Image (tube, rainbow, N blue to C red; front, side, top):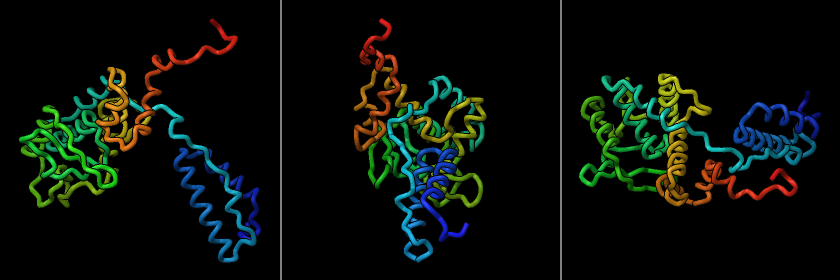
Length: 255
């Protein structure tokens, strides 16, 4: 079909077909890109009508789904399957502990510098979103794993990053994708089936476990370094048993 012959029905049909196979966030990006393209095409004169208003809106609510997490024993199984007799195994074990015990994001693990760890004070400086820096206590288990990697696994190089690639060039990871790939491989190695295989899986698991053990949303938000409590409220949906006690009975329903 020629671009000039494009109509509103064509735009709507395209979005309906494409959005059906995409996650909500990807679908929203697709519609945003389509609006930009149609606006530009109208500006160039390739379209007689500005069809940007014909692009349907993709509904996506931040509280629409439960956080994806693992049972705590599955986390321990993943950690136990790291071969700590090898340099890569010691590195991966330290990274997975940072994700599982401190709830670090993948990008925060990537950007961790040697000077961010205060061994005397037993704390670590986390470089978070938007340039924010937070000091967090370094659990003994995590500190020992990092120290073991630094002494017996980290290649000698000029980089100040804590975690280094094992193959040349000997530099830190390029981005968070490497951490997500590491997590996916660790899950497969441990035989753990998960609905989501990214690094955030451990962050969600930590928050969910804390909630089930009685931690408040404020405490969870502080550990996860959320800038707003609204971000943390998604975990309120995890405690289904508690939520059921708050639900009012349906009028005329079964008593």
